[in-house]
Image 1: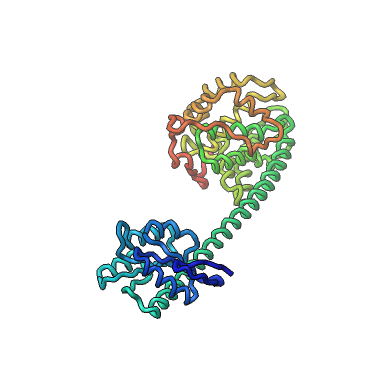
Image 2: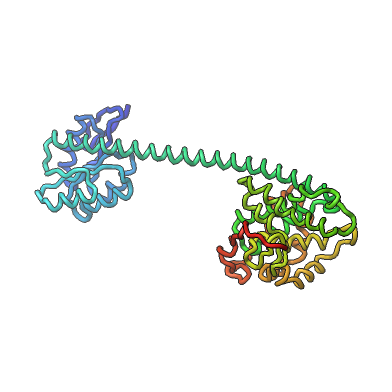
Length: 399
């Protein structure tokens, strides 16, 4: 139950009645309309001019009745600004002039109705009820839209949380598989994890998109999954491989690709697995691809893999320094490695790679990032077409 005082001084009580703002520079008009409409069950507030009305508008006003002709700021001025401030609140215009052009102008600007002063009470009430009906529909539509938008946001947040959990499960499974693969080759330790970190650092330096860096990490982790199809007698042979054994070893990129390409989540990384032994000069395998025909993820991987191979202990030699590895990679620029990627690699301080070799405890290979190349730097100017270069997967060529 709400108690309010009208401009006439009459105190009335109404339960959730529509709240109407009456705007007129003539005090007698304001008082008459307020009394009549209060008797019809409406709650009325009065304003002597357009600026005062505009200030009152946010106070729960559901409909405005305004005079068209007022000093300084007229009803048109109020109409335009009221719609900017409260677009759903309907406005009925009143005027003592039978001006058709004014009526048309008001309606075009969004007025709910246009009546000649003094309006007949029945006509005014009908106009008010029509306008309030439209207002309620507009308000319900807006509330429905707000609820729908909130529901979409809630659903999106829930889906994102589900995706994050699912991705975490995928990554945990991936790391478990990688650990098993690395354990099979006793001398490599966490080789795949290190290569994935090095590759991600170089990809960040090249300003590759985050999704491509994630795919590169997965491809680097799984690069040797095809060795599942290589017998232990070949894989763990202490001496050099003969030609037949070497041919069997060279099939592991294609075996790995065949395993991964059927898994949607790993379709993109599978191309890195297939091409990680290609060389920039075309002398690699299995297809002898050259230059930018090799996916950029595979070109980045070859540098990261070589860095880890040189700086890790092997049964036949001790690990070399990062500086020696950098010199060797620079020496093979243009033959084994993409020169642009080598330039980017050389721009990264060796200490950064050394820190990635043994990252802080608690960090996952999927969490580690590196500084991106400054926008506009020459090393990051390879266009998106080159970054996403595809490869002829069905082409056959002897290594």
